[in-house]
Image 1 (cartoon, one colour):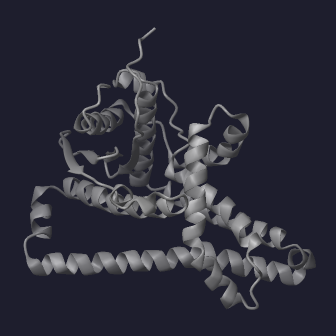
Image 2 (cartoon, one colour):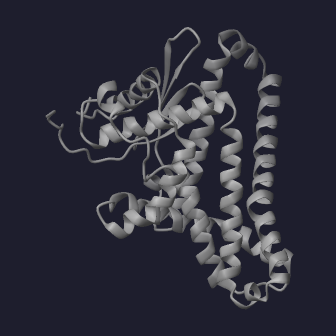
Length: 313
């Protein structure tokens, strides 16, 4: 049996990108991407969380919101780098050739982000609430029991989310991203087991992980049912929608704390049971990776650990 390395005292997170994987450690994030010629390109960036700079941001509920915002920022940067590698050097030079081009790209990015946010709110807030409201007109039970009304709202969200995942998984490029997602999880599990970071060990690991962002989304949906139920029912549809959008940061904060606790308490049968729905969803968002994809994920992980001066290499 292979001997395990010394105990690790920090967590690693990650994200699949275009033909690559981003790994995030406490003080660095590293993204490795394979180009069309088979060469692996790596970008390493130092990172100092706001939580470490301002202690009040490390308070429960608040730190979850900060972590989510920072993760989104890093994720966009990692995707941008992987896109540059994927496009190639010529296209990358064209993309950054002038101030006007940079400005246009920035404006487009802002519009894209705002548009995506608006569409997401419409999809996961407006539509589920509207459907639950319409059903309540025919089923008085939903009006009488607010928890049941919110459960219907949550079920519609889950159905929309699963439908979206199934739809995009039909695209070949997205399937490859899901494979890199699996490679990310397998690599991190190898690290957490204290095993030597090689393809053989990573191949044996599960492609599912309790700290996955997919699990977080599912937990957010479940937590929203509970949070909405303790809120007083609003007089109108518009007021109810506005209130539910306003408490999104609270739901994200509560969900982050739950995810953090449950990932550390996987030996507890109750926590393991509560983590199951998120792991089931990962059957859709992860696919078994190839050895070449595992190599890229391990390359990013090793680079991240090297930057942290970890002994587990």
